[in-house]
Image (cartoon, helix red, strand yellow):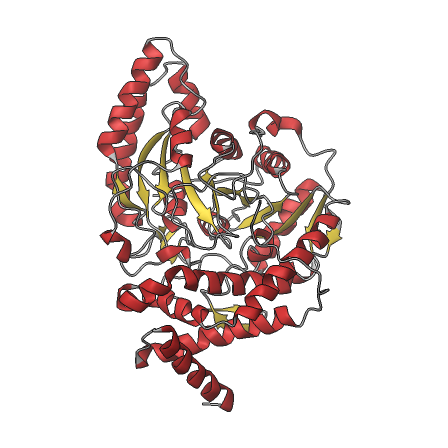
Length: 460
Length: 62
């Protein structure tokens, strides 16, 4: 069992092990296992070794080590790393100059003592739920190498689930942290829209883009999340509100929380595995009440339209000049998105106002809502369709049916893995009101303490 | 192809040309499929009645 980030940080701070030994072991594990998983697209070994030596020296000098002292982490390759090209999963961005500076989230994790060890594979330009990539080959699911990791943060899911790093960062526009968390069986946090700075990350859909952590435990999510909080003038959407640490309240329990499960739309189409995981979580929390998220299907449709259109606008020049250089699965969706009438996009933005107000009223009566994260367990790499609501539908556009209505209005979500006794893992979404990541994390912690939510390493 | 497919195909060809996009013949089926899905979603969104005064919830702060 690989250690969690919090175990590593505690050991290093107490001098039970060194940051240098930790990094050497991590780099060796990446070298050994990454050829099977294809999670990393770059390894920053020299930088990591220098950083580890500096942390060991600081600890030897009696200086504070930081809450993530010596914790190895890696980031989806749409997040800037000084000196590396920010690929965003594309071939085209290989022609970009290297980033001058690290993204805000990288700087903040390192300020807390964490050590960057590399950049991670992803679906091209984040328009993806599979983890496949024709330029860099697919990230592979550590629980079954023939299956998808989910995407678009596929390398982030694979690297954490495979034990290469205890902590990774991903982005989530429509589900790209929560889908890999589900398919790979790990914990993922998509914070409130505007909570974490996106400065220094390659965009996709401005009004939907979030960054967040993936890890093997709730505490690791909270530690990383706390370290990354705070205003940042580099991201116009980043909220001007002080950090609200969630780590301190993790153990407060759920006895006073009103927890319901989402019915209606969130039941339709879910596989037996998805519903079984939801039942297990709801039973453990005593969540007997069911609530209807109003117009969830329409919210998902609106998120889809905004994404397709805004993504196409972002890439229009590249589609004109270098269409042949895109991943075909992404290119064809982007060209289609360029042809969506603008009036429909405006209506989707207006509908979001109505939907936001309607969903927030639900939180007058409940503190958290449970829903499936994905309709099924990880499909096979290369699979193009799957059965949803009894119909064979294209896979890429439909894996996010349960995640899209939630990120559409920026609600914070923790995806908790609920592995069955046998077979592939799957996750459940714990959805909280805006700015209440602490509630979702408390619930996740309770499920983890009860042994319901867990992220075991796959057998070798 | 159905009449709707024909309409979509002509729309794609004309729209792509006007936007300065090249669509190779082997890309057409996938683009038509994805545009068809998107237009179904636009219909779902547009059918919802909203007051004229509803502000769009995109991002802005003065």
